[in-house]
Length: 315
Image (cartoon, rainbow, N blue to C red; front, side):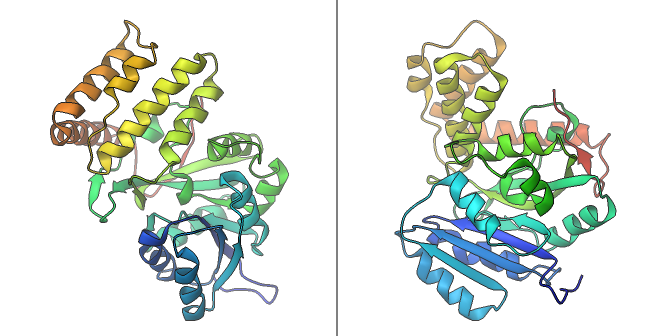
């Protein structure tokens, strides 16, 4: 892939807000991609932790980086729309400021976009890393063989057609949570949204990451009818998951009981047992969940062939 006289064929976009501890690793994972002909558009969304200084140093080091800064924090959806609006290429690849991309990620996704004109977006499976970069949560191909209203790939791993983004109106500015889920749901109405089954993205679990909590709220809202307590329970469960894979105790059992939304059903039982075990021994719960994930990933592997894209199967 080579840039044209009218500009790059691919734009990597990344909104940043207070991500200084992880910025160097995240940016390095993009600038060192095997596919090198891209522009890297970064918007600093009112950071107060010194992120802007790190970004300006990278801008000096790599001519592909275009940095835009703002003094006032816009938030998830507005900053995501803003960074895409600054991109000049017909294909856009998202990157999140605390995560890490596999060196071959962009090339693999670009090949899918080029080969299938009806694909409007392609994400990749990933694994989980903690704040120190240690692998903590395995890849899970079960995500792409089941039917689900929730996207099977991390938001930061997505690549999409700019024409599709514009056709659906981008992210909803009014959403304070789950803007990615709602955006890709609308994208399925104009084309195929697919996932690569290889772990080409490393999602960072850490104490400042709000992605999982907001995603849980969005899924519950879209599936309808669970009520405020149900949304609180889902959010707490996912918050506990984020803490667990970050190497901490989930610390959510008391809050779960306080929601008064636990019932005599399997999901509630699983939630209580998991939260209880996590309170007693987070390491034991992590070991059990890793074993479970690896087992179902292996079973899914009987159906899934690495390298082939799989369409998001909605309920």
